[in-house]
Image 1: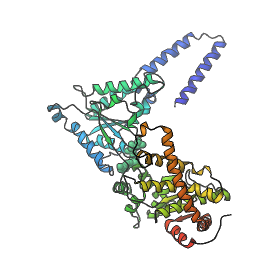
Image 2 (image 1 turned 90 degrees about the vertical axis):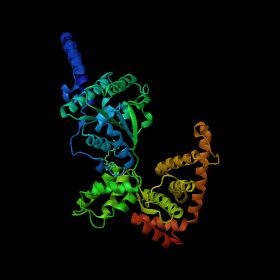
Image 3 (image 1 turned 90 degrees about the horizontal axis):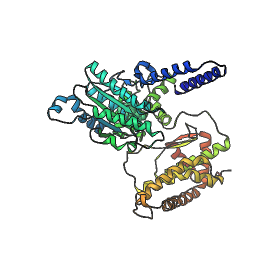
Image 4 (image 1 turned 30 degrees about the vertical axis):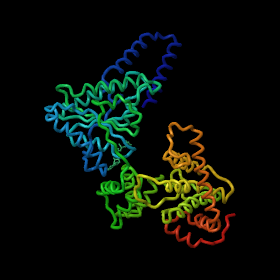
Length: 498
Ligand code: ATP
């Protein structure tokens, strides 16, 4: 849209320049153009339809709190906060300052938009949804004007429907980021100032009640002025769902789907550790597509299991690396799987060298119970598994490859976490005041220590490891059970890698 506008502008300037060289009098044309531009900028945007922020009004099926799986604390906090809208007369009588803004924080796809829609339904309010990025333009003043329009529209629609209004602003950090942080900060600051002005003016005599709900996954970037009492004075945080919550969400999203009798949603909830609500919704959808592709009438359990990997890593790729590369990938993945199985027996759920998304191969871990803490031992084991892929390449092929870059990144992150948690030889430290070089040394020491252990482990397994690599190259993918069976069979099998 923006690009089309710029092309049009360029063409107009070009045409004017051409007309000028042809000796035409440009003054009246320029005057007309200028007048048109001012009209375009100053008239209420709604009269120009598409140019304005077109907030999404509450169309589509109404969302209720029952449609949101898990997030019980967030729902409860939200419902409590909303009572002032439901019992506004009582609140007025008691002289309670009306709540104007609620900020929802949490990772993407955890149900922030759903919660805002449910809040609108719960309070019988008109829902007007928009996003912070829709306010930011390169021209100073446009954002502020759009904020004014948004609130004017909310008041108008609420009046017409004789209801309250909920304004939902997604990507709140774009609109409400700390002032003075941006290059074109004048525009950003004016927009944010206008939002503050509108919020301060809310609740005046005779106007409908408006509640602003902002959503962000970067609460740390928000301007402090927005978080002051009388503005966004309630912060409700949403987290990734626990196992029980994942089960709830899966039940909600499969309620209208025909499931085969073998589908075990509890097992799928266990398999999907770390998934957000949006990923779980996508998983249910992918499982249904899986069944459709095979012309099945009901969705089997296998469809869900297959879709877990698709949602996690992306679509299976058709590209087939050369035999040499596949051998390297097989050695790398077997390195991860071998070390993981030895450190945590029974923990490998799948080893494959079939490319999916960006991954050329991968090892998937068996589901584990949700954990909120990690011990030193667990962190060290995780680092060992991450390093094992590249070390196996080094050990069996004599060189490493770029395939381990993301493994190293994660290993370094974990090692840093260990330093911060006082698990390094530095002891308990204040990482903020620790020289970077010292942190770097501590991280390197942890990684080098783990490298030594993994290398010794793989050296010891050299022969059986090689035979497993050959089998993985042939079969391409194996389940955890197959892997463990192979492992038992491979002990002592002499099949050196060429
Ligand atoms: P973002 O930060 O990316 O804007 P969000 O937190 O606003 O994400 P939503 O837009 O509310 O996430 O969720 C996206 C979709 O994911 C929903 O339409 C719904 O299908 C599903 N979903 C997310 N969380 C839940 C949940 N707790 N219960 C049921 N469905 C959920």
